Image (cartoon, rainbow, N blue to C red; front, top):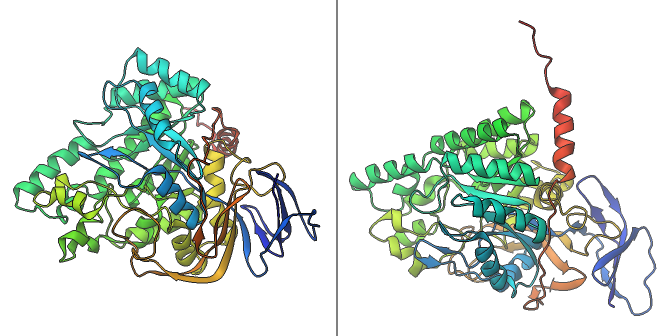
Length: 480
C-alpha cells in the first residue's frame, strides 16, 4: 500500500484555509494536521507556497456521446486524462437513451464505454420518453446502480425532448425515489420554429445559432421546469445556465424557499456571442453549443449569481467535435454538432477570472469547482473534502504557475480550443486520484481503466438541509 505525505501547503476547503500536511495511505486520506511525520517508505511531496485542494468535480460532461449523426471525439480515457491535467479528478457524465430505448440497456452501454476511464466517474440518466417500464427502470437505477439524478431535455424537438407530461411523470417518480431532476432549459418548440424562421431568411452560418436560441427561450423553460417541480415537490438542478432570464427564475424560486440548484459553465462566464461573427466559418462553428454564448451583459450577472449563492456549481458540458464534424453544418447552422471542450481548462479559467480578480475567494473556488457538486449529488465527504477517510483526490495548486491555453499543448482530443490564447496564472502542479499521482511536472501519468464508478445514494442530506434553511425564510401566511 503506497503512502504519500504532502507537506508545507495551505489546505483549502469550502469552509476554511489552514497550513497543514496531508497524509495519504492507499486510496484514502489518513490524516490532516500540522507537522505530520512521514512513515518509512512514504513519498514526500513539497507543497510549500502552494494550495492543497480537493480534486475538482465536473458535474456535466459528455464523453463518446452519439449526437446529431456523429459521435463526440473525446472518449472516457482521453477525457478523464485531460481532466486530471487540469485538476479535475471526477466527472458526472450522461446516459442518454433514445426514445423508446430501455434506460437499463443504455446505462449498460455507457458503463461499458466508461471502463477505460482514468479517473472516477458517475452518470446522470436521461428520461427521454415515458412508460411504466421507464418508471420501473428509474427505480432499479436508483436502488441498484447508485443513480440519484435524472436528466430532462426541454430542447431538441423530434429527438430527445421531454414534453410537460413526461416531465410531470418523471418528477413524480423521482420524488418517490428521493432523486434529483436535472434540466436542460430551452423551449424546444420555440427553438424549432425560430430555427426555421432564421434559416428561411437566408442566415445559414453559425451566427444563426444564437439568433434561433435567444435568452428568453431559456428563461421560459427554466421558469416552467421550476414551477412544475414546485407543484410536485421535487428538487431540481438546472444545468448550464447562460443568461439573466434563467438566473432570475432560479433566484425567485430559491428566495421563495424552493430547493433549486443552478450550474454555470466556465465558458459562459468569459466568452460572449461575438465569437459567432468570426469571419472564419470554422472558428465560429466551434463555438456552437446549446445554450449558445450570450451578449456581454449576461456575464457579470452570472458571476453575481455565483457570488450570491444563487448558482452553486461550475461545469463544462464537455462535448468535443473536431472540425470535419462541425463541417456537417457547413450550409445549415442547424446541422452543426453542438458542443465545446473545456474539462481540462475549467479550474484554471475559474482561478484566473474568479480568484485572481477578487470575484471569489479560494474557499469559494473549492465550493464551486468541487464541494458543492459533491454535496448536491450526495458523494460528500467521499469526494469534495480533505479529511480523514475521504478519497485521496487532491490537487496541489500552484497560484503562480502560468500557462497559455492552446490546442497545441492541451490534452483534450479535439482540434480546437475555445479558450485559445488565454493566459491563466494558477494551475494544477500535481493531481492525485485516489492516492495515485496522475499529473506532475506537466506530465500525464494516468492509467487506462483505473477510474471507478461512483455510487450516489438517493435522499441527499444536503437537500434536507436546504429545505430546513429555506423554511426559516418562509413568510407567515396572511389570514383573509
